[in-house]
Image: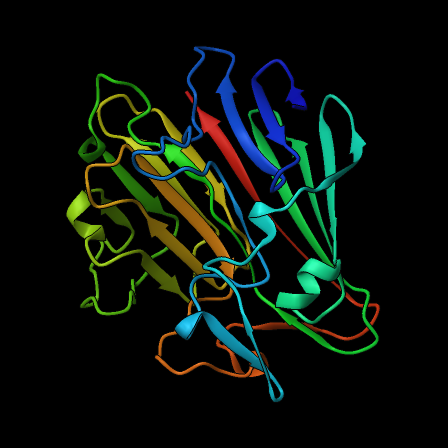
Length: 282
């Protein structure tokens, strides 16, 4: 598997799903990426495409035709092609094929570019419309982080600190009030009804920080309209910080994809770009 590294960090990637496998600090060998323990959640940092979240009845419509997609789409299960590799950067590409067209009737090219940034990594997504008609899609990141970072700590020793005051509008939860308007102390009971979802974000980043050691990671997500925060409620030792362009269906009625909340669209030959960053601080 390709390895990106500099004097500060080492990042291991895999072509399946173009997914980060490891993000290790060279200073103290701390592993920050969740290692996919099957007991809790088998992923590391999957890509959500061409939908984010779950469809009502796992189904959507394009005009009179219905299609089915699993939660978060199919990109995380597919083999990407390496198109550029160096010590500090790698690009992966996924093109439509007959398998994707059976579930998602649009022609596309999805490019994922990983670049080292000193003590972190920049992850850029590019979606290109290679069809002769308008295409519709959602796109999101789903990185999981070890929480706690070390066995001497507990999940409840950690907090999330936003750079602006935010309001959680998670479905079927009363509004969750953050301490000081920007700080969420982590407890597993917060996730008994699923992910916490922040909409109309004011913040450009959130910090996952240990109150015991002060060690932290920062996830920057400039211009993303949604952010999901999720873990398994059964004492799982990880937390996902998920910048999204798109969101799960809120009603039980399947929709035309063009009417789906948070959906993006591209005209032929157009492309969409977004990026987020993961930065570590020992």
